[in-house]
Image 1: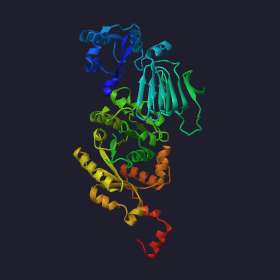
Image 2: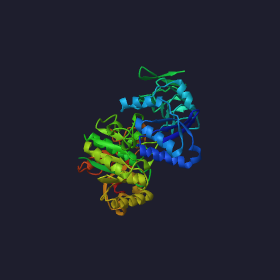
Image 3: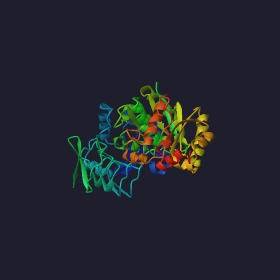
Image 4: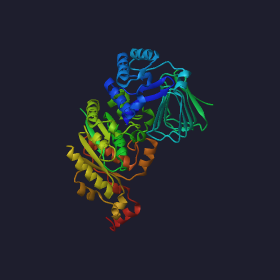
Amino acid sequence: MEENRSVEFKGTGQGLAIHVRFYHDSQQIKDIIQQRINENPAFYKGATVADITCESLSETGRKELEQWLAVEHGMIINSKENVKSKQEEGKSSPSKPIVKAASFQENKEYGTKFVEGTLRSGQLIEHPGDVVIIGDVNPGAEISAGGNIVVMGILRGIAHAGIYGNKDAFVAASVLQPTQLRIYQTITRSPDEVLDRSKNPEIAKLKDQMICVEPF
Amino acid sequence: MGEVLVITSGKGGVGKTTTTANLGTGLAQLGKKVVVIDADIGLRNLDVVLGLENRIVYDLVDVVEGNCRLKQALIKDKRYPELFLLPAAQTRDKNAVSPEQMKALNDELKEIFDYVLVDCPAGIEQGFRNAISGADKAVVVTTPEISAVRDADRIIGLLEAAELRNPTLIINRLKIDMVRRGDMMNIDDMLDILAIDLLGVIPDDQAIVISTNRGEPVADGSTSQAGQAFRNIARRITGEEVPFLDLDLQDNLVHRLKKILGFAK
């Protein structure tokens, strides 16, 4: 289960986007992808690969992976040049998460993920685009989005917006009482003292590297 | 070189997490360098009991998977700068860690700390096996209920099978007035069955509920009996000889009068 989650296949207009989330070596990645392909070989045969994003693969590793997909599985590689620049950016600062240039367009590309119902402790929603939760997010639950996060309910858990470097990403909630708020690389936590917390809708944005919360 | 203690019980809800938090606090009060590890991956609580939930960025699974350095995952306590928490991951499960990884982690931690306290999950499966690997000593927590004692007995057997000999016992949530009426198992009954050394007895105390909800361990400065009991146990762990609390002290006036008049013992 865990392994399946670490590689994400996503259909886009240009073809399949493969996103490798965790740090694996190239053999592990291959194994995981192989496992996924075995589940439905007909679907992947001859599919177009639009993009491979991976934080742990080097440029040559990615090339090798592309070649392997093309030769072994007859997939057509159509990856964009921006992947390359992402890789180079990553090399220059290995200690920081890989950051890619963010734009509204990009969020649009991944679309918006809607989740209905209460997110409970231990549940994790990950999505490269925007995330909208129709329900509450309880303590211990986590949302991590490439774009914005909107919670139509009480946000009590952890929300991380703009994980790939979108500094304009925001977190909005009907009631904003998170354990932790993260936007891009900035983290804030709720105060230890129990304060009179606002019961009104609020929005959190990044301003001068600080997360500011204001009503809307 | 520090010492790794695993706090375990088999049965859930007997107070492993509360005990871990309080012993960590008690040892830190004595000036020891302490780290408490939450080994209950997927059902973490120790961070909440210590009031450190909102500080978690990295966790135990991140450390063993190499997503961060060990020091990045350690959370310093609000009150004691020598007390640290290594939180569990909440969005993963027990299989995310192997016993070998836990042992390596414990070995690394006991180089830095005087005491490493591992809060074991309930049950006897993977989580339990992870938590006890790399431990030097085990502390078994039980409550005066036949089911908890049964599970404690099973756990002691499993600990011995894992070469963790001579675990010590903490009896939690003892109601002395019920014991006196014969409605609750007494300490000797339990020691008869379990046949291990007693490390301490924690009386049932409302202060525990209050402190747990506030995220402030009861051992921290509280005048409650339970707080005193935990501080005593912490001192016993350091090797000090501390007499057991006289739980009868809190007897009601009627009982004391009866005692004086010779109607009760």
